[in-house]
Amino acid sequence: MPHIQLLSPRLANQIAAGEVVERPASVVKELVENALDAGASRVDIELEQGGVKLIRVRDDGSGIAEADLPLALSRHATSKILTLDDLEAVGTLGFRGEALASISSVSRLSLTSRTVEQEAAARVEVEGRDMDSKISPAAHPVGTTVEVRDLFFNTPARRKFLRTEKTEFNHVDETIRRQALSRFDTGFTLRHNQRVIQSLRPAESEIDKQRRISSLCGQQFIDNAVVIEAEASGLRLWGWVALPTFSRSQADLQYFFVNGRVIRDKLVAHAVRQAYRDVLYNNRHPAFVLYLEVDPATVDVNVHPTKHEVRFRDGRLVHDFIFRTLHKALADVRPADHFRGAEAQSFGREPEVPPMVGESAVFQPQQGHGAAQSQSFNTGFGHSAPVQPQQDWKASDQMGFYNSLNGGGGVTGESRPAGSGTQPVLTTPPRDGEEEPPLGYAIAQLHGIYILAQSRAGMIVVDMHAAHERITYERMKQALVEQDLKSQPLLVPVSLTVSQKEARLAETHGDELQKLGLQIERIGPETLAVRQIPALLRGANTEQLVRDVLADLIENGQSDRVEAVTHELLGTMACHGSVRANRQLTIPEMNSLLRDMEATERSGQCNHGRPTWTLVTLSELDKLFLRGR
Image 1 (cartoon, rainbow, N blue to C red):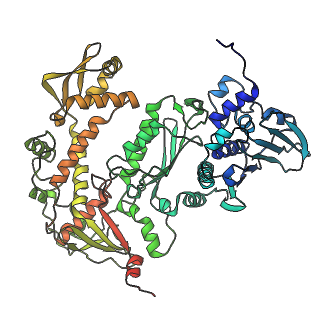
Image 2: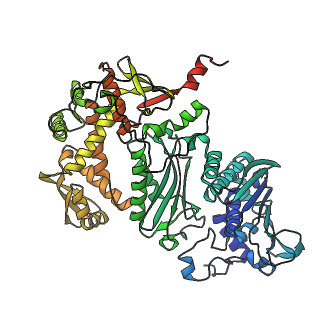
């Protein structure tokens, strides 16, 4: 067997480079983070051939003293931490002291820097072959410039794994996008092959921040975004989340920052996905730019060399805080928020600042508009469609529970006859200066399926079944919360064979499972007995439900599986109990439905994530008929 030997510094650095330096984008990330840690207010990045030939990063930060230049290129040399206590409360982006050493081992690197105390700058140069540094005087303002040439010139195998110039540049562009989103107070310039690609000035005001967001994420994102601002238990979450109607086919517009560091975390992803659960269509993905601020001592960033992953000391607290904040923000969204951007385009003005959470534009009924605004939509006519069986649940069971939520009467809501008001219903928008509800006023019904309404913004088309389905669903969920989730004992307990880990989990989380309506008893080292399940889910696959709940507990420390299945059933019942096509509605009934939509949470989507209404702006109508040309 070969003897154990100490690796040479060069080989050790190249091994470390395999973890830190994957492609040119990795180099740019490390160098830009160093610039930001140095307090730079301006960072200029210049590339040639996608960064393979040249990467130059220049900043106006504090700089590096001449005596420290050789040490800056050594492994495990850093000015950012000194003791274990520093490591456990890292407040900077970099702290490992590996980046420059790793980069210099696979490239030709030169670093020129000057501090404010120095009269002249100095340059240190090193090549990957021998790792010997050479220091010489140089001309340079206060700050630092790092040049990385011929990346992977001495590791041909690594260079073969690089993609085309365009692909590598796109990765660098995405890296700069993330850094620019993380630090609004810093200006960024990106040049590729002598051409300016990005030029971003520091953004101090809210308007400037939104302009940077629109520049990096698109104007449509900021037009369809809701501003988040929440603080609790030492946590602060702020940023922008897109409306569910602005969903994406890929998760390519999701940026989450913890103390200014961009991360990818399963716990965060689960919280966001849970908040968007019943408002996204099929496999669509939400879009967001969110910032979480926590005490650095409560988050471990020393998890992976790339520092993309973190570990929270109280992951459940963070998960619940993110979920509750986003869930409330999406619930507070009203129709006025959905077509804010469309209205801006229609009237030819700049879009308004997105509303803060808790300031959503909920319509307050006007006085003197009669039945169209004074009464709820008569949901009693939903009985025209019978409830159909769903999986193993009996239709009679569904209808019994369905009626119990509504006092044995109609589907939901009040049973007053629509149109009982004594004053006429306005069917045209009010004059300038008068208040108008966000969804305008109904004027007609199209093919017994759609409601046509008009407002100052243009024409609004409402899918009456989808809209009524969401209204019914939200009221049923509220009624279920008020009644609590009741359990039903099983005549014959269900026995499950599980792993010892799952059995211990079920035993230690017995109280939490009881709150979900599940009574599970451990009767052996690897055996569980299910004795009670939620009464509403008595026809469900009990074994699969319990296994899914335990899997959630293992993965996330908690489970919303019962709630998800329950809401799925309520959604099915709401779908079958809502107004159907070809049901003729009166103008007062249509206006009542519009008013209910304006007051109902998540009314922009049905239970399946499909849109409930759309706006055709006046400018779009003018284009169709060539008006103004």
